[in-house]
Length: 143
Image (cartoon, rainbow, N blue to C red; front, top):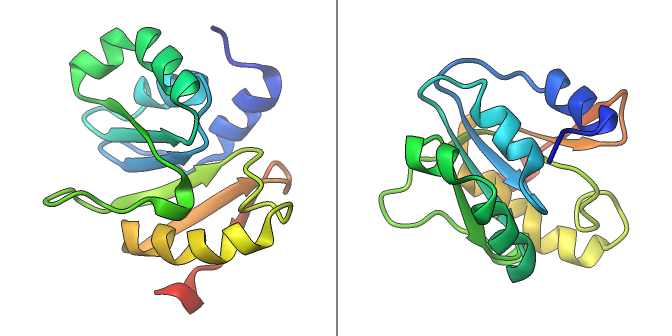
């Protein structure tokens, strides 16, 4: 699968640098995660989605990136996400068209934001679509 122009604009806008750790929330079939995995050197992308079908498709299409150690997937809803034992926090998180974070499901967002904040480094940032092309969601109140 190829990156759509919209997703390419979003990925290009992320402050990606070599060796960064990124959490993608609501990854769907993993198109953006695969693109980012190719840009981060020895970094790592964890892409999560609540849909088992989406995760299975993402894994099927990401064999090389998974084998390289730069990409992994987890089937979990963002409002239930937590770091696993010994899992390092992420430097940034992003989400595209995720109702819990874009205002469509505010109750879920209230559960999700503290979990996202806890999964990020002290200076970690959360970006969602809807800005030009991204907007940052402040996490100070959840740290």
